[in-house]
Image 1 (cartoon, rainbow over the protein chains, first blue to last red):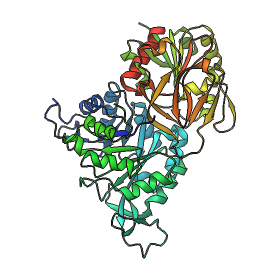
Image 2 (image 1 turned 120 degrees about the vertical axis):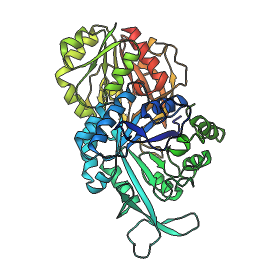
Image 3 (image 1 turned 135 degrees about the horizontal axis):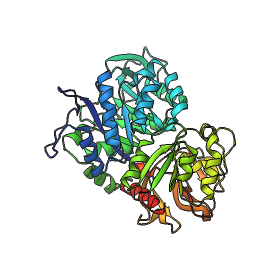
Length: 273
Length: 202
């Protein structure tokens, strides 16, 4: 039986010396607390089903060190690796895959130029191309009759707007319609992040997660807001997601991946143990 | 040390296969040179992307692959590599494969299940073969594919269930041409054991 995937996300940035470091990690039990490769090994041993590296520097120097991080990780960790953050050219994708990543996630560049998904999917295969969609709730439905209106937890109608540049810029684009378009253009998966929930520990944004899971044929990775194992459970059951991405709860050791998987297994969610 | 050639005919992540084989104690090289391929102790046919494009890229090496397969030395196709070994594929238009193993490559039917089939699924080992030595039945391995291989039980080493049962691993009648639909180089310790088993056969 196909299992639900648990994916820790590592935000990789540069330290003062120009080396790579993972943001927001408070491990006491690792020698090199912020080293992406050490963390990748650690999560692999804990039972992570995949890993996501997000290059949050989005600079040329950042890209260079990222390639080195991917190579060193792929040399030691034998589970799927997705790399995202500022990827905007076929050449960048080729470099990242060659270094040992299995998939890339594209975000702002795809919103600005949707054909980029099609082009990269035709060259590298749909299984390589994950479209990352950052979105935000918008309760102004009166002035947006062309948007997909969903019902929030308290019954309020809302639509979800795609945001870019890490959430700094709105686009007026409907997230549901954009996800469908991304699938049609050749995306093999959708990584959905709720900017309303990101960092809140309030749980995934279930209405939009569920809507995309039901409407699309490709797998949906839920992201943004996980504070406890129950949130991941809800992402799979109520949100119908195929995979759950989380960062802080793992990085701060509030819960281990093993704990989350045990919690899910007890509640009959299929997981790889 | 066993010399394994990973056939290079285009794109994708070959580094993980290479490192996985090194982990298994082999000395792998990535090459598209016919002489190197024929001199190898073992050959890996990798593959990501579309069937038609991959067959086109592989065309200059087709005779080399046939000659190698005839030698009786082991060859392992991974993911699309396994699919390329079959008779035909319906991806794009109906396309002929290498036909090293009889069988068809078919798209998963439309259902409530997501396509591509992405993630960790367990396999049911249906034949005793050195490739699966020490691998427990129902072991989890990593899949990512939209098309699956349909072949006879005698050519199936392991099966997997995703809406329907498909060949997760295949073998030719002579026993030296092998395929896995899953990615052993991305299947953690189970996958590394399978690669080690393959190296052991070389």
